[in-house]
Length: 496
Image (cartoon, rainbow, N blue to C red; front, side, top):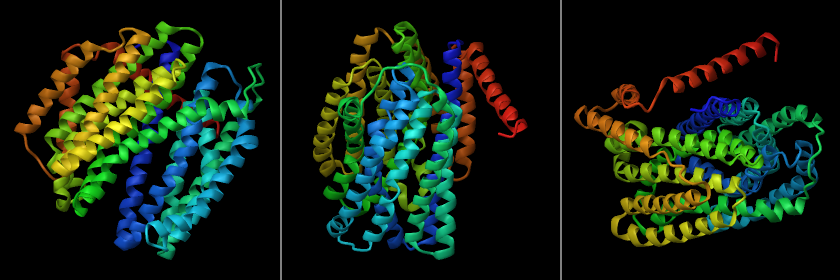
């Protein structure tokens, strides 16, 4: 790994933000697992549906600023003070409008879904949207400033506040409506925390180019929003069409498989949050070779992490599914195998596309996203009636493979040879080796996590023997963790 200051900051940020994503994943699982134990299945279903609808409002907000703010700040073209002022003068009125629109649409959505009990849930859910915008704007500004520690604090707090308020309200009231109110209050508290953490950075009055709200909304903001929405459609197309074209119980099995298969994508968001602003920073200074080195290094990290994940999930899919979701969900094992590969391909595509966007190429990623959405629909419509759940997973895997291949070719044309072929070969050998061990050593139940730990140790040892992991890698990790620990001790000693 590179040992420069920028690389150190990126590595430190990646560790912190992957950790915060891990907390968010755990909290999300805890909330849904806990509510299934407290609420009746039908009532929990109302909460799950309302949250899934609310997610689209959150995507509209995050998609419009989640790339724009970090890119402009890390390139040094716009000050945090300018963007923060636009949050209140420009974006907040739009988020309030989104809240009103969502609220008015609640009756229509409930009518379409044939359940009027959704109306109060959706009205409560809608109230969080302006607060979510403030929270996510603050988080995006901290990302662009490469204040990764504070960004991790905000991201973790978002998850933990929701956990505390949802369970506090639902335990005392037993009402799903108060569970949704707890969710909204948690987001509001995180928005307040975001404001507090951004304020110290507003004193930086360095001279930068002016930026207008129309250029943010109608320029790259609209393109990144379109990409975000198309990505989400492509990632949920299989479940939607499976529900429509196949047996009703298949959707439950498939939904469980999707939840676990998307874990690497959620964790990769932490790595992406640290890597993307560093990439924009180097390209903004004209340092293309250093940007290429960052791209090559992040691809190396992804290959080393994703390959063993896909192999081990493929080999142990059935006992893993039973352990996580009970014996009733054993049929989810077959689609889980393909979905783990498909999710890994989407992650690779996501990072290569990020390199194109960092280099100010927006139109081609939009075109690829459109083609992937159409392709996914065609594949799902063709394969699901014939192969059921496996057909849906196959469609997702083929779509992810197409996206990764095309985006990889475009990235190669723009940056030159960036893909670490040697790492791919060595990681493949090590992954197949631990896959063979897992086939020969069959376990189930609570022994499965122990097997995973031992396989991880064997995999790491093989990478060392093959020369993939070297002393410089361990040195970087040692320095990063020592730096994080030292920073924590300093803040505790100074009462921060």
